[in-house]
Image (cartoon, rainbow, N blue to C red; front, top):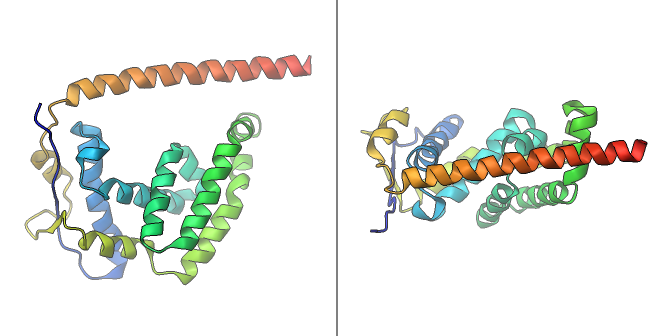
Amino acid sequence: MKHVQIEEIRVFPPSGAESEAGYFCNNVETAVRIALDEKGYIRPELPRGLCDFSDLFTYSGEWKNGGHETCLNNIGDLDVFERASQLLAQLGLFEFKENLDRFTSFCRDNEERIDEIYEMEGEAAARQLFYDFDDRFWEIRKKSPDLDVILQNWLVDQPWIVLDPDVPKWPAQYYRETIEDHPLKQARKEAVRRERMAENLGTTLAFWQRVRDSLGRSA
């Protein structure tokens, strides 16, 4: 089968206002999500660096939505944070990177503890585990340029970004119409479905094992 690759992302030019940098980044993120989630592409088939941008923009957005507890809940995959960290290093944002690396290590090293607190004490108690990372992020953010502006400027410099005033300012439908389905879309969709079924089964079995272990300790 002929290799299929997305070579460029066409996007409406940024307005120049720093307050609207997030809209530009979000439009690029929309193209990423449609390509990966709807059109059947995988990360290596998108332009180099585009998915790293997506990981970092997603992390930043989830932090704005509710802090690092929300990041863990809504993203979950620690590989996303590790890839975002790599782009932070490339951008020279080493304080952000250090905080994200500490958060990722904490989540990996304390996975069972975090799950138990969610199950036994609830979300409010679990959220307190991440206050240190939230406070540090906020301290760095107050003295740094806006992350959306940094990402927008980085995107504009990428050879695979094409600034096109004919692209709609709200381009979701445009990308659905212009990004072609990958030839392996259906096969990949079915593989993901099977993988998720296996993961759900494993999660359920692990939960009941922890319940049995807990009951055994209290007996």
